[in-house]
Every structure is written in C-alpha cells, then in structure tokens.
Length: 229
Image (cartoon, rainbow, N blue to C red; front, side):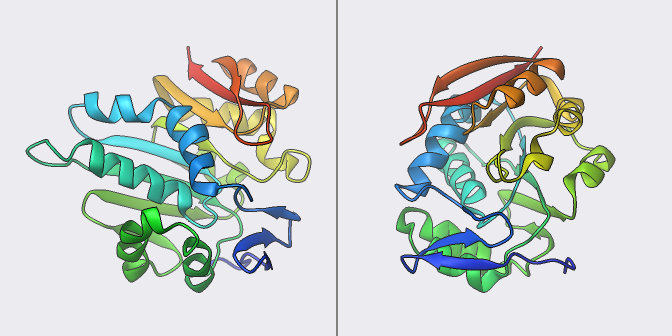
C-alpha cells in the first residue's frame, strides 16, 4: 500500500471530500452523469468502443473512487455485448493518495446504475496494484504522477484527466506532466477533462494536442477535449 492514503470528510453522508485538497471527488449534482459527459462523451468512447477490432487502453490521472473506471467498463461491456466475445479494456490510473476499499464502497453506493460492476470490482480489489476482471485489466500506479508517468511504458488511446481542481492541485496540471501525457498517447488518441482553465489548454496545445472547448457539465460552463496531432 502507498505510504499516503486519501484523507476524507463526507458531505451529506455520501459525497467524499479530499482533506488534502479540500475538493469533492465527484460532482455534487450527479457524479455518474458528469463522468459520462466529460470522459465518455469527451473522448467519443461509445462510438470508438464499437469500432475497435480488439482491446482498448484508457489512462487516467486521479483514480479516486474508481467511478470513472466503472463507468467506462460498463460502457465497454454493454457496447460490445452483441459481439462474439468482449475483448479486454485496459485501464491504467495514476493516484497519489489511494482511497481504501471501504471508503470506495461507501462512495459508490450513491450510483446504483454501476452497482453490478462495482460489486465485481470490490470483490477483487485489494487497494493497490493490478486487478484482472476478465474484460477489464486494471492497474493503479500509486505515487507522484510526475515521477511515475514518465516511467510508464504504455500508450493510451484515451486519457481521463481528473485530478483535483487546478486551483487546488496545480501540480497535476503542469506543462511537463501534460507533455508526458502526450508522450504516452497513441497518434490520434484523445484526452478529456472537466476543466477549461487557460493554462491547462495551453499546456495541452504545447504538448502537441489539438484542443477544443465544449459545453461543461452542471455548473461548469466549459470543459476541454484534446486530440493528439
């Protein structure tokens, strides 16, 4: 287990808030809908999932409760249900302060739509490392992503950039880290994030992404989508 685990408070008994960053882990309006809008739609995943001939690699900054992974896994399985077999979705996440499984389970109770996938995940998840769930192969790399991401040997088809707010967690949005994201993205691969902060968009552009601003979720007016040139 990583030396530093997530320290939490709970808002309204069900929304985890990071004590380290004073920021909630998901939208207080609807965390699942936010994930679908920002990360699935922002990366065009439903269309891409049905068109790829075999596996797919997602990478993520900020594993948190695991909600993004579960939402993507559900979409992967359901979008390919009519195929002869469902290939593997690879999901690699970089997390500095991992949440203990009991806290994950408590947070995920708010999302009954992903409950079957959450149950399968939590039955196997030890809180660290790798987890083979058949159609999903998960790896959570703990520690500072500024160190661990450059050392990663993989390349992603799509990125979920889901660190805490850039105002409260600027280290996870620095230009050199976004350059590492680009280095670990396949040509034509995408990235999406809930933030439209100017310095984040400029960092993605400097890293080689074509950046567009889209309508955000809930109270956020805009979000960011990026495609590697």
